[in-house]
Length: 212
Ligand SMILES: Cc1cc2nc3c(=O)[nH]c(=O)nc-3n(C[C@H](O)[C@H](O)[C@H](O)COP(=O)(O)O)c2cc1C
Image (cartoon, rainbow, N blue to C red; front, side, top):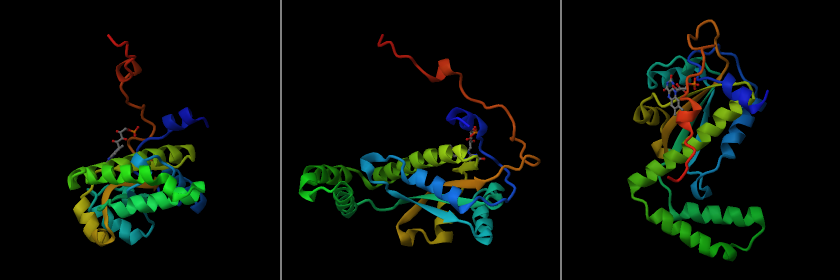
């Protein structure tokens, strides 16, 4: 299946049939999310994987009772770091030096510019910025899932403070931003299965900018 066929095939499944996806396929989707780009490469979020049925049932209560939360195979929670600090920049610089076999001194200018960028954010801006990075990983995971023929249902429809309390995320320096249910569509139960895609027409969506 080509990438375009996969993107036409996918939709945000509202009902899933509980069938399990293989660990290998799950790992491919998680790896795609890990490889997503992020501003400064800081990846200021984590992806939590929840398979436990009882826990997913409880999460469903905090997620507007959306059935796909309990009917999926695995639920991913994209959670932004509550703190993004200089120490994270220093860790990233060390990681970069190791991955590229560089002397960290060669990255000193870059390190300082990242420190300045992080210091320039208000706490609110930092939270928003971290959450935006998580959305990029969500998009990448959605595309990877489609390529693997796995249904994926993204959700903002949940109560983040309630979910954070339930999972004790604040103590771990995390704040939930997005959910992604992974599994298989239930063709019989899902009223959206098989419906035509609805998107703005290309001529409305793409503006061929003439400069005038
Ligand atoms: C960030 C994001 C949040 C979403 N939240 C929900 C949600 O909470 N519940 C839901 O049923 N669908 C949710 N959706 C699914 C969208 O409604 C769906 O992607 C959109 O209508 C386009 O349809 P398609 O993805 O099936 O092609 C969300 C999608 C995105 C990208």
